[in-house]
Image 1 (tube, rainbow, N blue to C red):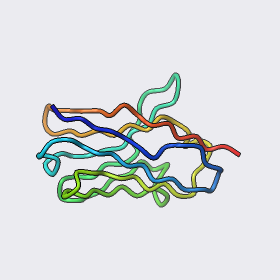
Image 2: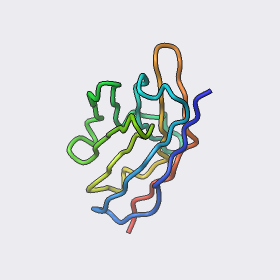
Image 3: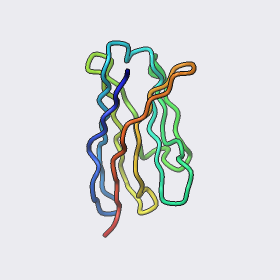
Image 4: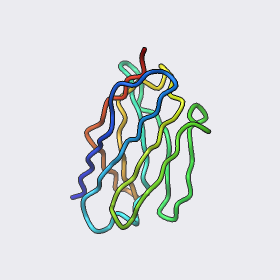
Amino acid sequence: QVQLVESGGGLVEPGGSLRLSCAVSGSIFSIFHMGWYRQTPGKQRELVALITPSGTTNYADSVKGRFTISRDNAKNTVDLQMNSLKPEDTAVYYCNAHRLTLSFWGQGTQVTVSS
C-alpha cells in the first residue's frame, strides 16, 4: 500500500508564497506520475500540476508561471512551490500518485489566501 502525506498548507496574504510537500511511502515512488490537485466546497477536484517519472511537467492554465512542481526520487517527495498567490487559489490541496490503474491520494492540506 502506498501512503501519501501532505504538509505545508496554511494562511497567506495575496501575493505571498507557500511550499507544499508530499511524502510518499514505499520503494516504487520513482515509477509514479505525481500530481497536485485542489478542491473547493461544491466544486470538482481539479488538476493543478503534474510531473512524470522522467520529470516532464504540466500545469493548469490558472497557475502557469506562478506554481512549480518538482520531485525528489531519492527522498520520495513531490513539492509544489506556489508564488504570487491569489484568493482564488484558496482550496484543499491533494497529492496524487498514479500509474496505469493504480491511484493513491493524500488526506489534503488547506491553503487559504486572504488578507
